[in-house]
Length: 113
Figure (cartoon, rainbow, N blue to C red):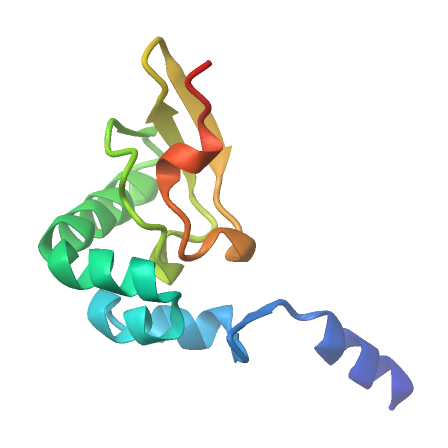
């Protein structure tokens, strides 16, 4: 019984929800669990984010590399677990996304200098 409690406490959560619960929401619904600046960005650019998520899902099924120049894109729960190559002005840096990155922008993880 003690081991079960320890296993459950090690599960990573974001805003009190597990990753599977967050992935069940669509992009606009998951925005309400993010910081205010990220909410505003997602609500204004939800069509761009949804297109990117669909493209990522297709490429991950085919085991292709996901490459992007969209440094200002907010990381949503559906992108967690993917390895995204982000352009830093010279080359593409591979960045594995984790649950702690939700709400941040892609460009924060691929430094330009």
